[in-house]
Length: 144
Image 1 (tube, rainbow, N blue to C red):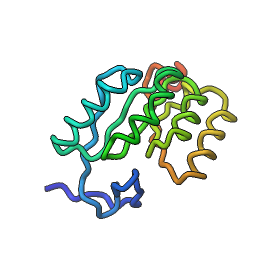
Image 2 (cartoon, rainbow, N blue to C red):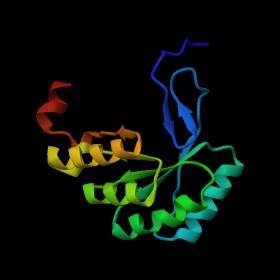
Image 3 (cartoon, rainbow, N blue to C red):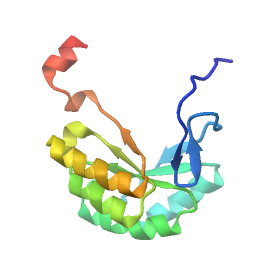
Image 4 (tube, rainbow, N blue to C red):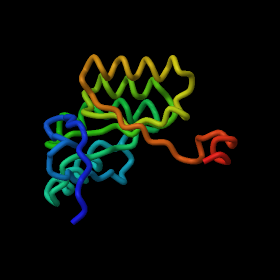
């Protein structure tokens, strides 16, 4: 078995991640987050299957508005997967999500990313930085 690299433990809601914590299972819903009923039903199925953390897409303000009910109904921590707008991240934090997944290349100016980081820090909410090739400048892609 491959030896795990020692990392810092963070909390995603009540689930410890990293350090000497056991590996946690995360999944992402495939529902339209605006459909709270369908999203909550899918989260229930994931909970029964042993999922520890669930991520939901937040592509617009209606999806962000649905998060309060979803977070309240979920028995496992909910991570908001933010699409393009720092405002959606801020709304998600206000709704009580346990984590954020952002792509700084899609959010815009450094000042907007800083607003999100500051708001998450105030709530002790971890942020996962996810970057894909589509959001990187061509010279960076060419170099690496």
